[in-house]
Image 1 (cartoon, rainbow, N blue to C red):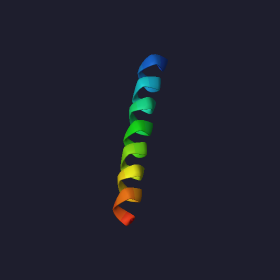
Image 2: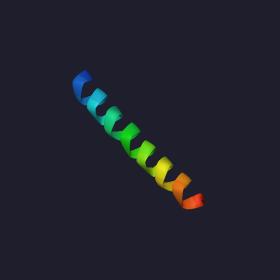
Image 3: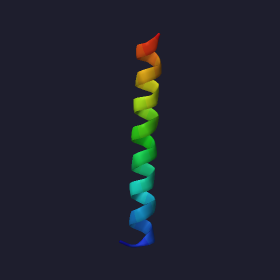
Length: 29
């Protein structure tokens, strides 16, 4: 795995976490 692939997978992970966090925040209200 090269650095470029690591960065892409990291970006994808943060996006997924942001979406799930926002969905959870909305669901709590």
